[in-house]
Amino acid sequence: MIKIEKADRLKQLPPYLFAELDRKKDEVKARGIDVIDVGVGDPDQPTPQHIIDTLCEAVQKPQYHRYPSYTGMNNFREAVSAWYDKRAGVKLHPLKEVVSLIGSKEGIAHIPLAFINPGDVVLVPSPAYPVYKIATQFAGGFPYEMPLLKENGFLPDLDKIPTDVLAKAKMMFLNYPNNPTAAPATPEFFVKVVAFAKAHDIMICHDFAYSEMAYDGYLPPSFLETPGAMEVGIEFHSLSKTYNMTGWRIGWAAGNSEIIGGLGQIKSNIDSGIFEAIQIAGIEAMRDDAAWLAEMRTLYEERRDVVMRGLAEMGIKADAPKATFYVWAEVPAGYDSAGFVAHLLEKTGIVCTPGNGFGDPGEGYFRIALTVSKERLQEAVDRMKKTGF
Image (cartoon, rainbow, N blue to C red; front, side, top):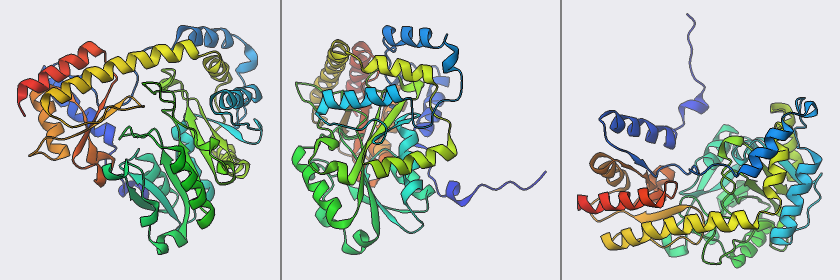
């Protein structure tokens, strides 16, 4: 037997947040407790039938059984361009300013490899989706964490980033509507980001995965619709959350052609693209989706309202989200994030996510994902009420 030792890049990683949640959940299930899992942001509804039907038809065609293009089918990238034009009034060159992704996570994980050298700084939000920081570390970069605080509307305070950090910074990750805080970004904030990027030669990578999960008439702005955004950055998107296609692994990056080209160069050396039948189904998903979006938004609004009523009755503070399918709530007095989530799991069988699992500034919060039925959510808040904390 040879000696097998993991690389330092793996040794430095904390346990992946959701893997640890799964482990604890399994322990509780093994004791016969009925678990209500609102920990992971994975839609519980099926992919719309017309998308499935399109896949079934496309998969019968032999021309889609060969290696795909790593950058994506031309008609898929044209569909993405049409989506941006319809959604945000943004005009994109489909062959130069769009690249397909095997889910947006893949692109986010690979973009630092294209532009970050060892020692370069990447500005990452915290609390945040863990991949921004991990991808930076895998590329040999240094992640500088920008705290997302309630007093700033969970937007990073760009003016507080030290000058010595800015001198080494090459990239910034942003994500609005935000996971985990559910906070939106204003057009005015994006204008400031563009000016900041130009002043310090920093490319912007905006994760727009929750753009269509918006409520009460709110429509989140795309970063790319900001004047000057195409000069400084790109935007990642995915069909996962909007169309209940998390397992299909299809998304894209769009924006500045040089940045898109760099990401495409990484992909050409690492993967072989998305199965073309899935891309055909993705085109169908983006076509005439107004009725579907209205239905999806109504479903999550109803779930959100169940949770918000229950939290208010318990005296737990949380702002009603205008977007995403998350509720970011403050833990009750006397608990920290991990302690409260562990208490809920042990006493009620409810799986939530501790805020500090997304980064130290998330301490004092926990996240509820609206990914079970409103009836199960009502049961969850009823169980919480009975504990009395």
